[in-house]
Length: 378
Ligand SMILES: Cc1ncc(COP(=O)(O)O)c(C=O)c1O
Image (cartoon, rainbow, N blue to C red; front, top):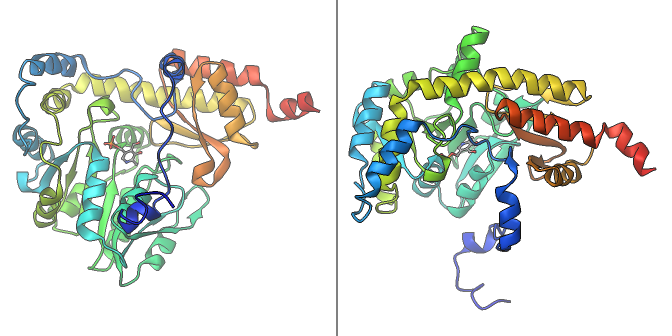
């Protein structure tokens, strides 16, 4: 066995490896030229106001950032109508997922979620030495009864991604409310609303009620709502997100956090991004219109597309998706094949600009339908 195997902690030993060999400069160059529809990033990038704020913040980059993110925390508290103690800013919402797991989980304890959900839940639970239970799905959406049935006396967290990544499906407010009311007192519900702005826009157009998650926080429920600046605000590369929840629990999480983990440039960008409603509006409107065009384009090619409430589509290709993703990459477009999510015939494709989506659809057309591909191989 290797030199450090016996020295490292059990969680470090037990976790599946995420180390991928460093890409060659040529591979990095090729990748930088791809149309990236594989990571649910914002095709318009940051708001111009956020870019200006980042430029201004650069001159002070010689100093450590405000560890408490005080200005941003206050602004978020006002924005959401909550006291600042109920807001915790972290280096992306994934950092808060890890903090919640470090704070609430330990060997012998578990978290519960659905199968085919955000991959970081299992990484964060395992890194805390705990176990993630994945309840089965029903159709392409969560089976909340199965999730409730999976809870035991050792459960401390339920993760609900709403909308879910990678299926893009959403749970409406009334459904979540009934669910939260049934969760036993020893379990914290983490409502991961990374795609909140997109889902809210879809819900308004569909005249349905998407989320009342902050009401549960205000009522003092054991609920932590996660939001991020990585998606609708276009700041994925800066790493800034936050949680809204019980002050005492967030206080424990804050103790576990790395010092100075949210950079001053990220804090400045997030403060400015919050003010740019026009940018968010442009982003969500493009997303809604383009989701329709992209879905129709894929359906016309014979693929099954799950209706989305996020900034990506879950699409069943009816054949091995990794090979298709590789061929799309040769055509200059990156999408996510979903084998690791137990859906080897499916891809997740981010909804891009009209031009990016047309490039993707043209590449799909050039690859031909599954039937044509099987024929051409015969
Ligand atoms: C469900 C879900 N939660 C959280 C995140 C990560 O957000 P952040 O960039 O804030 O860490 C993602 C990103 O893909 C996501 O899909």
